[in-house]
Image (cartoon, rainbow, N blue to C red):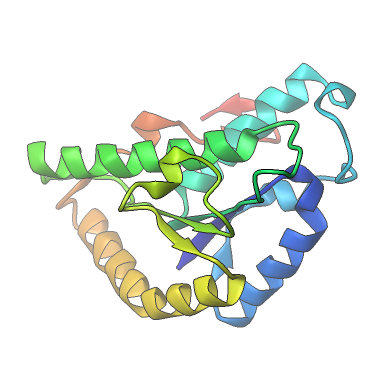
Length: 187
């Protein structure tokens, strides 16, 4: 199972601890933003536009490689500056909706069936959508992820077999071609 962790950039160090929790459960974290060298207090104006474009594309690739996007929310009185985490969770929700519509229209195509969950208070109206699960605590979210892990791992193995046998066509690269950070180009 693969999980993308989305949170305020200023919480990067705390989210790194959640990444360790996932690893202890045998769950892979796809959030490469946690490895960025910038201090958690770095402002958006302190990095180049090129860096922003490259990392935004990488983050979207990381989301597309995941089974679940976990959005860490904050209460409504906490000041927030950037909001990238809301874009990320919205993107994941859109991919999940597209996957459902695609399966109905053409069952031969496949996209990873993403799920979005929130940890903490519901911050906005979209967090009340029934398919977005909310967990007040990280412990509750971890219990859910652990319950889902075996199912997701078996499903991913089945999809990999079907892809290898050319029974289904991957749509992932049509949505967002892989970005090579070494050449800074799309493959």
